Length: 406
Image 1 (spheres, one colour):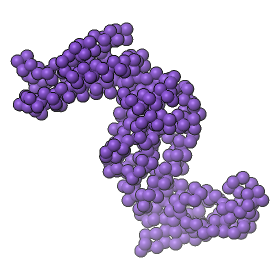
Image 2 (cartoon, helix red, strand yellow):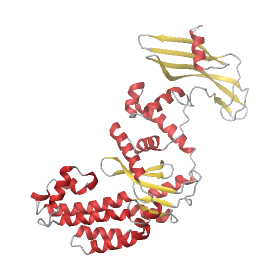
Image 3 (tube, helix red, strand yellow):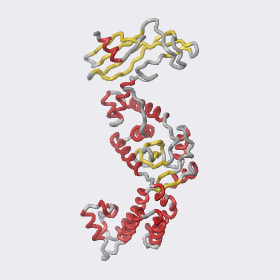
């Protein structure tokens, strides 16, 4: 069998296309496969689909293909331009590559497989291509896959922000809580993110009305956006963020008291903030000693209130509101300012906190996605732009059908 016949079969070329020749440069570690078409061949118009169009002229094109062993491989072809009676002169679409792309479909499939597992820059070193070109491939497949999504059945959404780079640069994620996939991501963490999300829903067969529940933190901007763009949705403040507020209040008491009693409270922060079930033996002993009445610590009083609040999550739905009222009464009558402020915050977000007992929704699934996203960001040592960062979020957490060639 001739080498040209072997390559023609391996590439799956059909008439009128055929492998005309191949050139192998050992010094450059380069294989070039040259493709041509038989004289008098007819082609299909890439726009209207009209068959049997005659060739007008040809253009020379080149594509990067999968490596031939350890050697780079390129396909080089004389691509016909046909004259369609309806569309005019058009370049024929080749079966091995996308229009206007310099990679073959199989090369792109390899690149996408690598980019799902490692930073794009690392993948670019493996395939020996500039990472900017690979980013264009990734964004194309991600955006194409997202166009096919249908959000008409989504009823419960979780939203949370994640940092895209150091400082105060954020991206807000919207997750379908039923399927645990990222539906939408956009730059910022203000009320405008809800507007952008609603626009995206309209582009995916939903006007937003089916969305009946939204789980989020207590961000005033988020709440303003929900009230404006999703007034029919019930808001649930998830357990994670409420507990975080309680811990922050306890820690603020510790910070203020540490100025007066540094010998007792120095290096105790994580002991106070760690759930007793997860404390180390050293931390448990440390807390046991600091809770003794002889020290009369304000932090100890705040800590006990925080522990008592944990019982709220274990109440029966019918008893939850009564428990929360009693706890808030004690917190409001506490001499500790951070605890009083915590009680005020809870009162201002009362219904959203109690809704947890009806919906059970939380952003735990988002915290999991966020951790994966941040790990990817750390591996990549950051992303050049939010567009790159968002594309990677979709690739990691979007559960997209990329329809890659095999």
